[in-house]
Length: 277
Image 1: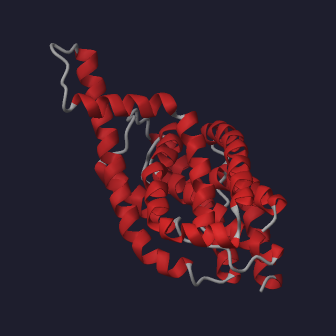
Image 2: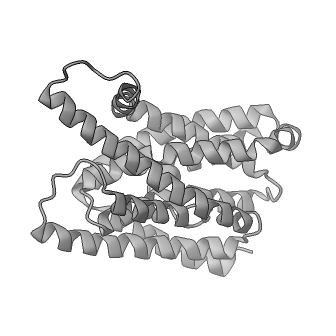
Image 3: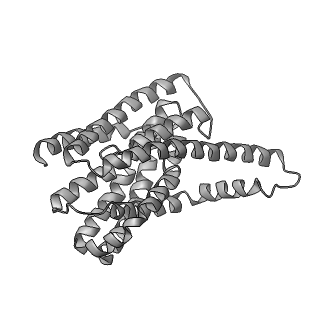
């Protein structure tokens, strides 16, 4: 792999990780077009970690609040005010939601990891179409919910967390967008748009870290088959492009326009199934 190819894959990862179009699917397609058939899975995970850093930077205030709330479980505040009690209760619900969603995702991820290593490019392209249908369907459901619901919840309930975890687990399959399926799952079960977008990316942090730890066994293979320079260049490109894409997507989520990406995913999926091998 050349440094140029590493940068192209990094930019593609950064954009596709946050836009609901499947980063893993686009990486597989791009590697197929470049003729890179033996790229270790850990390289893709490195790029995911780079975009994870973009998530941490963008949501740094919310993440710090959650860390502080978690710490207060062990070092409680003396004589807390009503506002502090309410804030702690809301943060606790948020943390529990992350744990539940991550558990469900982890269970599904164990089974999907066997499929990922053997999947060919045509099923990946079919996954693009599945993602498009999820976005369209969730948009229709969300608009129906918003017509009669004015929910002010700032955290998903435990039932909603299980659905979101299931959606994120499905999104680990190449071709099916993790962000798209997670946000779609959130909207489907009645989570507000802004909460759905934020939670979708924060809940990705433990999932991506877990995948990174599991694939560290292939570190030597990445070093020997790819080299350090393409990995570093790809990660830098993924971080920069990812932060820009995330900033844009969060504004787009509030406008409720995610179904527009189906106009890209459906033709790309069809063309891929026809022409790629």
